[in-house]
Image (cartoon, rainbow, N blue to C red):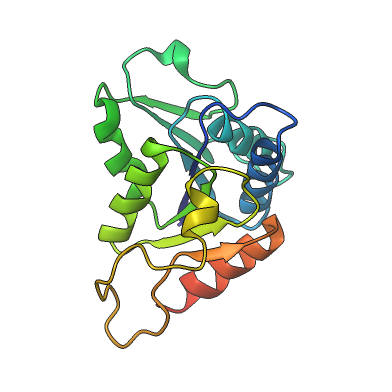
Length: 179
């Protein structure tokens, strides 16, 4: 069974921006590495990761999942294989955060809420250091709070990364061995 990896972040990132470009590379690299992608299904970073995933040579139908906050399927980005309209609004962040791991790229308050939920659910979190603004660069290489999520398990923090390759390498290492 393929592991579900969420990519969260800046919803208004534009094509050509650093956030969009790294998200697209990560989406591609995740699928090439045998993972399934989960996003909030909308534009920006979510669209970029989905686009990259769909362009991967190892892409299979069902690999790109979008968990929409609303009930209107037309809000979904065009690169999704599976669209799940929830009608949950921001509460849909709980569903996205329940993935096996969560990758953060830029982002505002919605991204922060997803990251906090993932942290509380003891999910692996990785954050892009290169974001000019947003939560990923602030959270990278730091714990979200002082709780001990993995007693005796070593470093308990949001792992920072600079490239898509480094991100997936950290992901593979950490998911193979519990933190």
